Length: 174
Image (cartoon, rainbow, N blue to C red; front, side, top):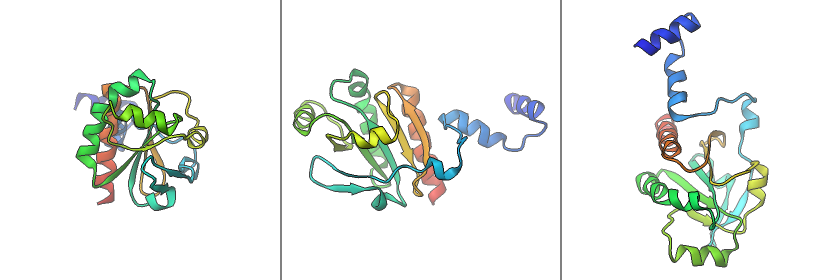
């Protein structure tokens, strides 16, 4: 209540206080662009098992994109926690891991490392469209195709923010 009182004093009322604090908690980036500019780009990729995945078939679902590569220590370090998210939300969320690494390298890597996302190798175009500059980078896309959260780097805070945004979107869709 102390923090809410500060919010009220600063803003003149407590209107939107809960939304403000929720966004701070999950680390959601507030959109400064019009909603249509926050749309994830259309894409079509093939996972390493030969399954075609396109953005149109993902509409109506919460989608998590993870950009990583096999030589990225932080990417590898966060995989156990990401696997827990897959276990927790597997029926409700699609988890896609995209890497520029060639498929042979990825398959060899996966013989030694457990990563339960749907893996897409040889992928450069979507990363360019989304402006990926570092890895790992995560995106959470809602059922309408809006990018609702972006996280950079591997740390426990990002994992908790990722979990919080997934929970929020699933709650909104019910």
